[in-house]
Length: 223
Image (tube, rainbow, N blue to C red; front, side):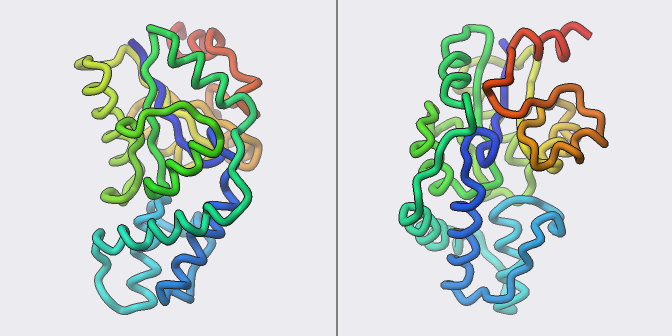
């Protein structure tokens, strides 16, 4: 059995605006007003780590993971006040098709906090199991999130190991994470295409309507 690890924002859901609006405005509501919104500046591209950095810079206090409970509740409320998130083209169909494929297991690893991630997946009509969605609520590093998602998938699908693991994401940080964990990687979307091109990734797709599973297998499993 093979495993595909899906990022969520701008990989399965068109949610960049809703996520960033709710995230930044929730920080402001909690007294975090001086926010560095150049996300590429951060060591780890996760909600919890970026929140930690801005929390400590603004409030001059040590960040605790317990702060996330109230924060993500308010962030979720703000997302629900915005226009609903839609799918990245073809995402619903590819998830449904893969769920029917006995050769593949699926899991979800996101830098987002969990409650907002569930809302985005629900609004976009993505078929998922909550136990297979790992967010940044208790993990700062993307490598830790993806590694946890892989372990959850092993337990859920009752396997000791996967023959192959493919990670899919829209950001350069997703590629770096995949390389650090020594798993295959598919880049998706055009926003970071030039970054992907410079890194000579083996497979890139514009959206899920441009994805062919056999092509991916040829690239990763037969070379």
